[in-house]
Image 1 (cartoon, rainbow, N blue to C red):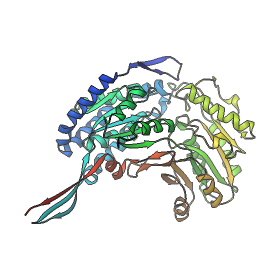
Image 2 (image 1 turned 180 degrees about the horizontal axis):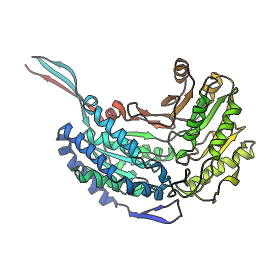
Image 3 (image 1 turned 45 degrees about the vertical axis):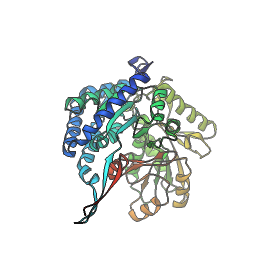
Image 4 (image 1 turned 135 degrees about the horizontal axis):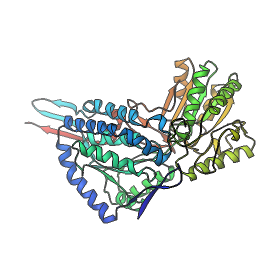
Length: 457
């Protein structure tokens, strides 16, 4: 079976790769398991140094990676790729590794040595998405390797060249080929491998339906699973907010990468006293975008990764307008082709009865609602099946934290949005999934505790 990357730029077949047969996949698993014990036996400092060198090697490819990403999933080249965040996350995780993986010494006396160590799961499967294919992958790949696991990376079919790039870079600096493998697998083979207990841990970033498939495959195997399944992230602008900063950040959070961000802003609630001005400023920002070929350095908004993703947003938007929503962006300002190139849109007069305010859109559309107070905003923010991030805008940090305590979400931002801090646990609740990546907790999820009770006499 072959997978194809259909470029959103022009609809051409950009890359084709053959998937592994079950026999080939089993052999890859066996090689990884065999190589993992020797990798784990290396000094932690050696593993850290090799992963850091691999990251540098990826950075050296950036001039080729940036247009390659544009061809695969449509992000404009003007934004320069993902290496900044890729490097930041890997570097942070390397820096905390010794502390995060340090044994917990309970007793070391003449009579007993009692200690809890963090040991690797063995083989970790990382199933990465296409929207930020380098940054989402490194979230797990770097700490998993540093912790002593072998890693198999399966990338989305929309970005098949990313894993090849990472493997080439990591192998070039001395990370053994069997310790870090890029693999092409179809859905059935992936599920079969999980069901066969091929992996000690599986990390999946993708759709809710994909997460359910992962859980179903792992049912009864007791394989650990980390799931990040998207969101419907809200922003709340209070009456004392820095309005210009709020508008600029939230609209960028809704539209950047054509809205294809896991923690992108998909709902905005604005205090009634600021609502009209917020919408006016937001419209001005969006009207300044240029929709076009992502290889053009003047393009600020590229195509969505695939026409089917664009069609979902078109449908949500059309349904909302038919139900009374007001569209503020004139289609005449953007040359939309009815395919992957999708114009941005701001909607008011929306309600939570509309799909665009309940379903994940993952595209350049956002609904904006007026609210009267914190209680109304909290109720609306929590009225969602998802819980990844929320963005609060106020000058009062105590007020923001009190509101944050009441929001059902994984991360709360104050006066910023759409950012992943590697020092904090990246996690979610409800249909967004479970588990946690990055931070010290990321290391804990990629290892298991092992207790030693040694009686000396």
